Image (tube, rainbow, N blue to C red; front, side, top):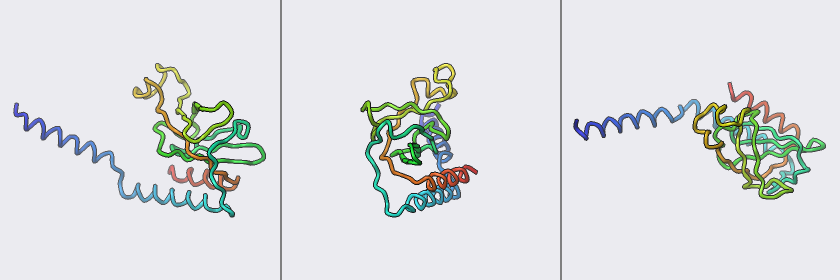
Length: 163
């Protein structure tokens, strides 16, 4: 067997594999349009509110995963905060359960970690073999205050972008 032949075959397979991972221009346009709509929604508050580094544990009572980068924290008296993760969190999906690890006992802060969990968190029930050593570790970003109207608009934008 010619080693040069094997190397060229491996390179050809790698090129085909990597090409299959790229997204089409149409998909990229849809993603950019969705992100532009989300940016427009977040800029609708006047005066603009600045992000918070931390949320006290008693400020929120419900956590809702919006997509692989966005999580909404719901507080009392129609208070909401959006946390946009610095990078996409693999395995994080809408309506997922997450495990949060805080460095502080009283507040959740930027750079604290979260792990997306499946309904059955035991290794033998997990669907994906790459989760057998634990779920991927992701970090929180800053907490941006939102209005109830913005949360509703985000919900509708993210629901329509799934089609």
